[in-house]
Amino acid sequence: MSWQDPETKEKFRRLDQVLDIYGRDSEQLIRVLQQAQEIFGYLPEEVQAYISHKMDIPVSTVNGVVTFYALFSTQPRGKYNINVCLGTACYVQGAQQIYDGLREQLGIKEGDTTPDMLFTVRSSRCVGACGLAPVVTVNEEVHGKLSPRDVAKLIKKYQKKQAAGEKHEDQELAGPGTYQAPSPAGS
Ligand code: FES
Image (cartoon, rainbow, N blue to C red; front, side):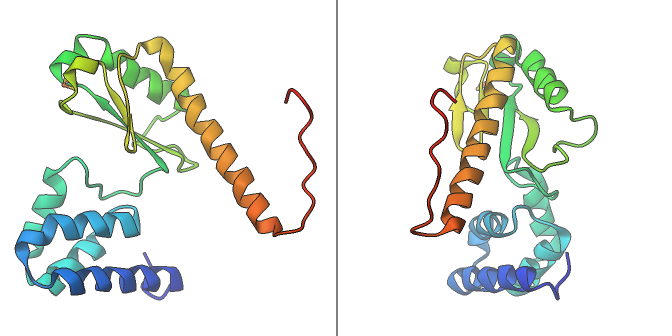
């Protein structure tokens, strides 16, 4: 992370706004960290140290909170964060095969994230939806009662979403009044 990079500077400016709201109230640390993660996408050491300094909380405390909660990440994450619950209810219903299948089909050999930064696959303990076991969450969306056969479908769903998003962005970039040829029927 380069502090000179304009994009990084802008992110720290937004973090300052968050810190202005919460001040030095240590009870708001989790909320500040959540918002910092939304801004930066993850919580690298520099960001933790900055928050520690600004809130006057020891960096070891900040780091302790970051590493304790599964929702925080110290590594850059993909656009789609897949979390496979490996709690008991999900595990006995085949969650491990789903987790392995996701990693295998996405070609993740090391770490948690695909090289294109589209998917991060992680596992967690019970997410409190045992009635839907086995459960996989993708960002805020919950997918329940999955089987290992659903893995390919799940991946495809988000790949399509990504492709649709890119198309949408392209259209926006084309600007108003630009003719967009209709796609061929049936495609
Ligand atoms: S064990 Fe997976 S939701 Fe409870």
